[in-house]
Length: 158
Length: 158
DNA sequence: TATTGTTATACTCTATAACTATA
DNA sequence: TATAGTTATAGAGTATAACAATA
Image (cartoon, rainbow over all chains, first blue to last red; front, side):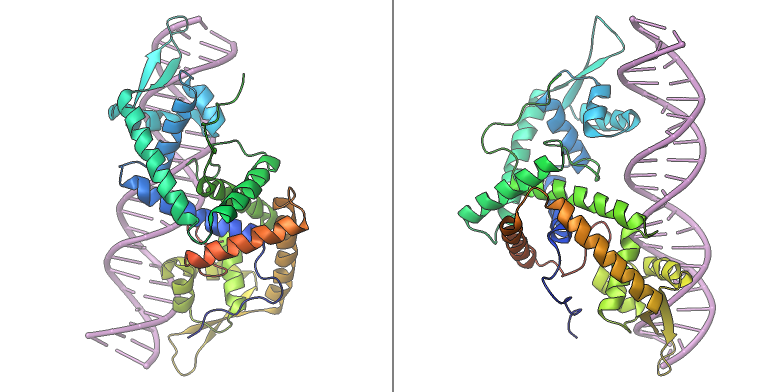
């Protein structure tokens, strides 16, 4: 019949709401970029490469908090689709410098559009001033918690 | 040397921050309840049983959004530790009504303490008034997005 | 025949560790 | 020998679907 009764007092804490809404946001975002034939990890890597072109796979793995072995398959997938390129470093031929192709740049623009639409949908309950307030509070929490900007931990990585 | 450059403009949207902070909050919570020898799914089930004693496993599976087959193993784990009980319904012997034991109730109190500490740590960057503001904004988002109170989607389930 | 709970199977994802090529 | 990248293996976790008991 009815739902589970709510606990007495102030209700769920902010931490639970953050985890609950965060998981929901991640799922909805995955659905949206799925229409671009991308997974969240692929999207995260593409953005990470674009953010600082020329980094090695080791450097990327460290920043993203993922084992280098996992990055290989991810880079393979984006490489096969012509979204990123591996370029050998002549000075040290062991390194693969990663770069985004033109097709990758175009896709990143579409990803940005998807992100804005997703953002708008997630904040549908709030007006502009409230969204700015939320954004500011979340930014301070992320900073205080030591989270790396643009890197999604745990999922791993969006 | 330095980190990846930040994108121009307003920075990351609220949706990304919500997903990022939410995943972080879930991980930190998992660490804390791990000291009670509990996983997030076990904790979520225990709280769901306590919220409405006597429900069948089917009913729990529906509410939690998990396959019934998965609930079996989860209930087994809590049952073996004496935290919940399966009670046969004499009227319909197919049903297993789930109840929390006294030991389960005691553990739930400790879980609540852990939750409060976790909540406080996650909001360390904010003062009391700001926490109340955040809590209100998140509550409205969760409501507008149709999230079930107390149920963590996606992880599955915290 | 339909439903509850259970078990069995298969699949996906991930990390660990071995391997190669360059240095 | 040490490091970047790759490949191979194994493990955890999950869902799908078959099964037994009760209705």
